[in-house]
Length: 516
Image (cartoon, one colour):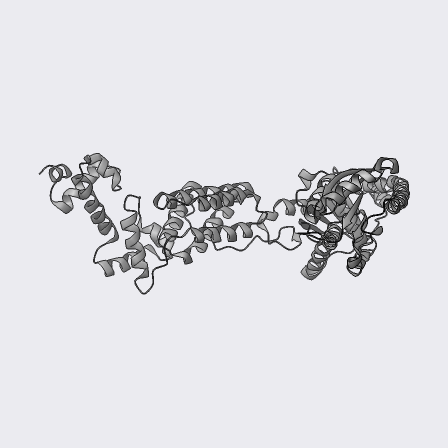
């Protein structure tokens, strides 16, 4: 049976066409009906119909827009256009998309029946021709695929050259380009073969080379090597123009001069695709191409990933909490530089981002509970972290997301750094604050920042922090809290250490202060 989808925004017309036309007797089966072009595209992606009956005027996406999307995505359907008298000039534009027929509303069932019979004969003839060509195409695909498989050392080179001759690709040079459609692994072979058919006319009919499928890849055998980035960019643009809005990534394995080296070029292209996350988007990927440029790793070589992550979380948190937005991007890039230097893979990088965002959101929302809408936005962003296809997109979107979480404006004036430090101390005195952490956040050396603080406040950083903690401790002791509880609350993990600090600044023990 020839599968048909009916696309019309009028429910009565959709139902009428399904019931008044003797579809089964004519060799057709109506598999779905859609109210607009957007619904129709979803049906086509899932059901792969052979034919569509499309109304010209529809909401959301009209008939012409649907035909344009079908063409750009490589759908090869027989289409009958339906329209009113007033739409005739509009409907004539559909001719450029090669529609199979045109009918005026209200539809005459006899006229449509005759048109369907003619279309069925065309489809049957095409199927007969396809069956005649299929064996030859399948054999050639099999030969090309054999050349992509690595050979054992010492394997008969003559047999390999014989395979190349049978496939019709005895050339002076070769270059393999592998193309991976988005979602190809989940979609089965449908999308891959659709891509192959769309590219055939642009590659084979122009003498550039030949195209085959090595699932989940569409593979281009190019006869002339791509010389330089200009030709690589031109090929990528050709692929983009041919495939339209369909998402893909593509990589070249580089030029080789012998049949024996074809498999190596393919392996290089595969490797580049597997590491596409770390490459620049919107271009043909190249083997051993440099990753996205980032600053040098600023962290100590002996620091563990856990220590770096904790430091990064604190620095980003303090930056957001104080409104120091200018430091968010550099801090993210510093963290990435460390993880890339450790040769961590895509999954680990994404897991690190997830942990980073989760920790920062938790800290921020402890002080300022998020609204329901904000909670949904946070949840949506975190779920999408693992869906990013390129590192630069993940970095950009994370930067924007974190800035949106900032609760305070950035301090102004010459005292900005001092204001930030004092704010952090008074707000986060219970945390394990270190001058080194704040220096990294503010992009100063530890010694220089410490001197700025001393000049402005008259106190060393640690002395100032101790005094803030002791002042808060006095308030908690007066509220009746126990000494060891107060010690923990104000950031001292050792009660004895807290006792010594308290006596140094207040001249008595915490117990004596509590019970004079």
